[in-house]
Image (tube, rainbow, N blue to C red; front, side, top):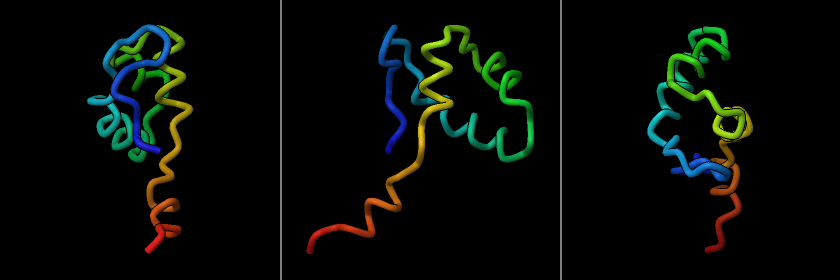
Length: 65
């Protein structure tokens, strides 16, 4: 799925942080430090980042047509 623009619970914008989060995670940084550096303090916003799974490529394989 595509990262949500805003947190589902509190409404804080989080979509613009996804690419930086993903890049830093691939480099091997500790997830807690990444989330702290991005300013995500609430557990609901952290959950949006940690719970997101990129499924767009998988879904695109089953496109009708």
